Length: 167
Image 1 (spheres, rainbow, N blue to C red):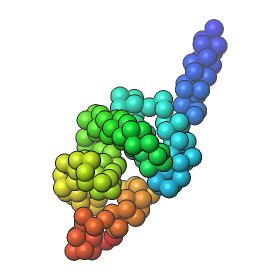
Image 2 (cartoon, rainbow, N blue to C red):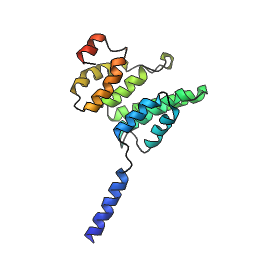
Image 3 (spheres, rainbow, N blue to C red):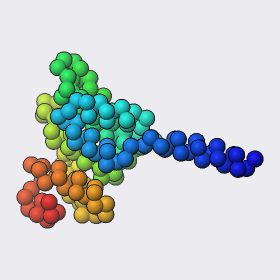
Image 4 (tube, one colour):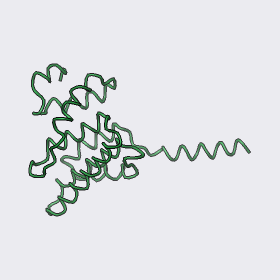
């Protein structure tokens, strides 16, 4: 009886986590989502089970994809709807895990790329300082390379700071 119970429990746990997308896949789709609507939709779809409570990081990527959908629609009301929904979702994710470097990067990246008339730029300097302070502490090589790719291009980080961070 114990063996049957163990097998059932193992099956439940395995099926619960079997479809969790890898962070590499999520990051890749995020990069493609800027230009490719289908990648954006796929990212939203595969991350739909996640929210700020069960996985703040994946919820942040989903929020960013929702915001990016504004680039892929024509109707101004739809654009604003996607943007506002994504912004709210991203802020919720950050509120649940405010020291998560990758979440703060997602907000920094969004705020430095959206048009200024949207008024979503309150945290640029705060997030920039956070990223500059925490970037050297990253031990995950893939994450460091991933963030370096974006930070090196940022006009918000000085050339001196880029050199210091070895970007």
